[in-house]
Amino acid sequence: MMELDLDHLRGWIGHEDQNSEMLTQTSVDRFNATFNRPSSRDEAAHLPLLLHFCLAQPIVPTAELGTDGHPARGGFLPPVPLPRRMWAAGAIDFLAPLRIGEIVTRRSVVEDVTVKHGRTGTLCFVTVRHNIESDGRPVLTERQDIVYRDAAAPGTTARSMEKAPVGMRSAQVAATAPFLFRYSALTFNSHRIHYDAPYSSEEEHYPGLVVHGPLQATMLCQYAADWHGAAPKSFRFRSLAPVFGPGTFTVNASSGGNTMTLWTAQDNGPMGMEGTAEW
Image 1 (cartoon, helix red, strand yellow):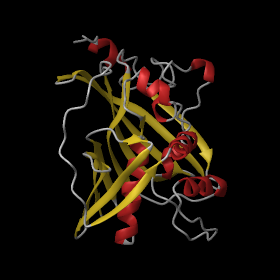
Image 2 (cartoon, rainbow, N blue to C red; image 1 turned 60 degrees about the horizontal axis):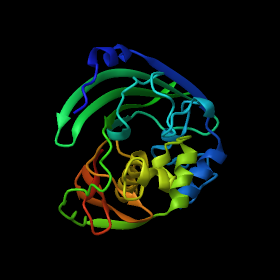
Image 3 (spheres, rainbow, N blue to C red; image 1 turned 135 degrees about the vertical axis):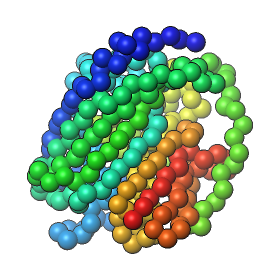
């Protein structure tokens, strides 16, 4: 079990990062095309939820990427010496809508670094707070929990997990390689587990390409809004198990008044991500 220098890693608490970009109609059209959603040129139309995942992202030269495709560690995020990095959970509070033509600004700060020892080994959790503004208007606040962990040994099989239930509403999604690649491009995310099948299987020992956590969160949040007929005031989610492609997975929802429970699941497999939307 790897021992981490927690005091050194906690020295990154308070690190800040900021970036801005104009939200264009083209960005919205590309996002909607990726998710097979129609785009509207009506200025009053609601923009897709969690579009901010694709805006004002960190811009790092290719020469400064690590072997996994992520920016080399030790910049904004602490240099955690564990090979696997995944989006573990998130919490979003929606304050106002985004608007095309405005400058979207992301201000981020590292809030906490903790280490836990679990069944699968050492886990390091990094908590980041994002504040998103559009032309100076607060649009949303987001807490992002990132987990770093050891890679599985070659030939290791995942533990048996209970098959996920089917929601009151359920939709099947094709996790094709082009779909995953397009989302990586939208978010300027070069993590190789999402598009480089040989790397994902040979280096990080996954059984296939990994479906992005924020992609799943986006589909869950939008599914909730489509069913309810309005964007939620808040959305919380956490990853329970990886979802892999190429293949299919399902998006599920069960509603109870102003609260909706949502989850993704590998087709005929376990629950991948669970979420809660509230109005």
